Image 1 (tube, rainbow, N blue to C red):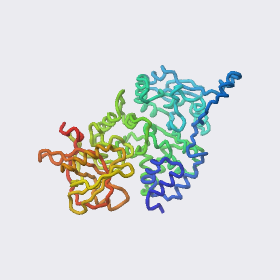
Image 2: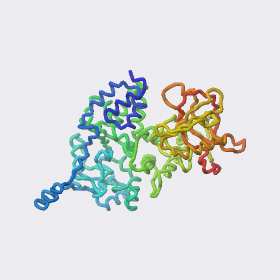
Image 3: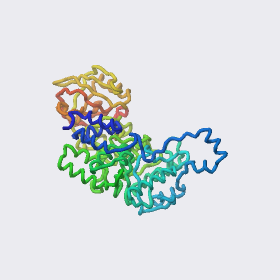
Image 4: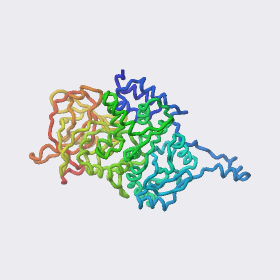
Length: 516
């Protein structure tokens, strides 16, 4: 029998070295109906020296003063021991953009621009296969390890494309403008690079150490590895015409794994459906395309070392072009405007501050969100219109912080239970909470939720909601609000809410919300 709550699953996964965010998401969603012994049996098939072991990671070497002195007496030996670096000519990087071609390399270190006849790597930089900013290249030892790995799995790949080689180093605030512009140009060609590859090879440190006995083992390990935690790997698999997963023993067609888990989901939807949706969303599907809710579900725990990539990494897979100088919020705005209908479906999701630019009702990130995907709302000139359960807040009984989160104990104006507790996301600014307190004092504070309080009496999850400010308008304009933030309703009280048609304005509280 599955455990009565998700926590024992989470505890088991973390005990085997699985990332905490991944473990929580898997315990709540993907493996909620799995038995602990089933999960443990799969995890025990991962055989690695330590939980942080990575195939491509090299140990840190400290050069002693004795070694430096020894260099004088035996320089040839010293030179052989020094790392060598592999990097393509700059002019070929620039040519790859102009020709929309993949800049590929073979085992001999020869470079060529190709439209076909190559394989692309999908990997995690933090697992060792990382470009060195000082030497602006990849260590020769790691370069050789790539081809050694492919040969050991009998993967016939003469030419290989890897972002770690084909994209300039840097990406931080000190990156030269010319490098940043070249990086952006290459990012905008990624749809062609990944889709034209003979195959995209998925390389994850945990899966590489998996001695599987069943394809289901591969599915579970892949969803638990670091590969499933990075925003860039999402688009790499989503753009691939064919993807292969590399394990300790073999390779698996990603499409076959999706088909397998789909058949399992048809037989036992409670156990496998969520896992199938997560795995299936990562597969290329030109017929269904890709929606904002798809991204949110597939990338809920994915991270990046650069804030801008929380928007930029989704541009290739959405067919959008990134522009030099764009911020993350400008990127998110472009995504929302490109999918207005789907954008409205995640309006009430909790876990991220709202956008500071239009649409101000939308989450400013796609990761770490939780809530209910709703039916599309009508996108109008001044806002989005839909049905919500609304309750007016009479006063704030108490405010405090708990586990880094700002908490409101509220008294509402409704029949039934009047007390309600709302928790803001840990990354929500305190000034937002203070502003909403003022709104309540002025008699204009409401809590909107897409689900009624009756749902809180069942299940083990909190309700997501929006803390909003009523806008005084002409009566014929109806009930209009601006969003201050999202919250989780933690109390299980049952309120007599009214379901109302609401116009949620595109502008934020500071803007007044009157612009068309």
